[in-house]
Amino acid sequence: MKVRTAWISLSLVSAFLLSAVCGAVEVPKEASIAVTADCTYKLGTGDTRKKAKALALFGARLKAVNLAAKYLTHKGVLEHYEKKQSEIYCLTTDTIETSIVSEEFDPQLKSYSVKITSRITTLDFIKAQIENLALIKEEAHFTYGREMEQPVSGKIDPGKELSRAYRYIREGHWRIAIIYLDHLQKKYPNWGEVFMARAIAFYAMEDSVGMIRALRRACGLENQDACDELSGLDIELP
Image (cartoon, rainbow, N blue to C red; front, side, top):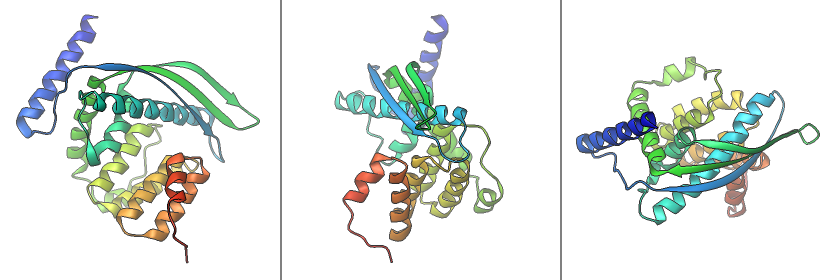
């Protein structure tokens, strides 16, 4: 209990210091909400049960984070992250504490389903925000050539990996973002989130053909956001 309290205090101190130095972090009042979320990942060629579980768990955590963020921002205790939302929410999936209510691998449907429960606090978002600031500084030294030569780590870390892609996109490093997402696509060929991020990058580059193709791939992999975007578009590919 003392360790937990010390960690919370350290997080708050770090946040206040960052806020004072660069005005980048605002420390809201601590609040929390209990959330239940689930996700099903369908395995494809090359997928293992370990990878499927990790991606299903990430999907459930991301749903929980989004639900909690809507509640906490509505209550006025969590700031709006605007263009940084996706990258911070992805990192928050690693800061929240979750309990698995149920999980099931269906060999016939080739799917892995996970249901979780979590009590998410404003401090979870603060920790993710601080980590995001550190990663921004670290990645500032990355180059086009580095991304061309360096493959993605073999470690399964979907939250941190996807967050990096969204930082590249927000910062306008679209070519680097696409190269990085090419690496992620090889690692996670059946993960709709990767193709959704590609669609956003192509949109930023004003490449409607690339965007539509990425959205279709993401929708085919049951990414609902991609399906919703497609339903509202009236663009024919050449």
